[in-house]
Length: 322
Image 1 (cartoon, rainbow, N blue to C red):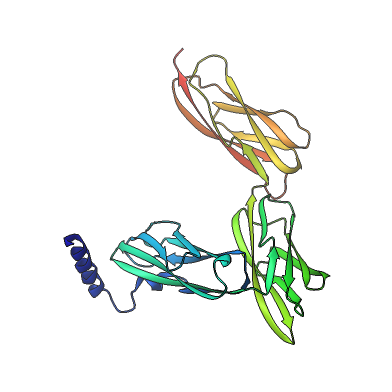
Image 2 (image 1 turned 90 degrees about the horizontal axis):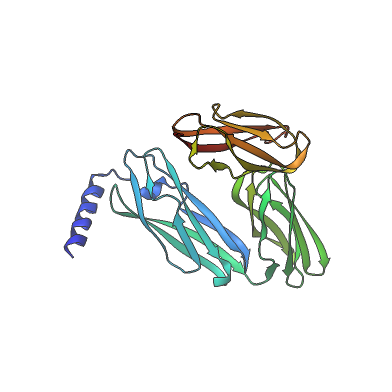
């Protein structure tokens, strides 16, 4: 009980010294996110961005929600001045029907005890369904142009009259297959950025002359078009004399040539197995320390690919006495 009272008094004291309008919730890019009309089924996602524009270090010690249909977590617990983090919130539309408003409570204990309230809302509609319930591409290789499809079923009399993605990297079209059933096909641009990301697809429906927009989530994880396996190569302890060698595999989504290999500081060297254009190349990496000590470097593999022309392989090893 004493610990709680002390913390409460400390929080009140610190709050009292702050200027009006300095609530930590004001550091978020938005306090409310409305997913709008959505079908029952998809898992909706949103990131609230927090930028620390204060002169103090912020610390998030807890994130909780007012409903089990939403899960939320902080990307970083400690945010230094000038730095940013995100609060990731996901809403399960299978857990409710109709309108739903959920509060995400973000609790701070530095620079003071304070709780910021963020809100996510949605209207889950039972008159529209999807199979599968999201446009999910999964993992793809950068440079490819895959497709993802979902079938949308509408109640009698409803039609899809328009479909558009929020991201310019996505093209979506719809086609009516049978009355009340539409197939949505999404195609990604080959120059899609690397990483995990999501966007929204907005579907316009019309019934009895009235229009409504439905939000559908689209998710994808883009891997680099050029991959090294392993990307970190570690040699066992080596005495002087003959070099030891290991292999590294370099892959791409299309045939390519290795036109050069740079770096290594003279201790590490590498050679490609062929000069021909292939989607997979094997590099032989040699380690000859020449003296005692710890060695680390990087080998830069240069290719003739246009978008991702080079990749780095980190190498390390230990030299021992003979």
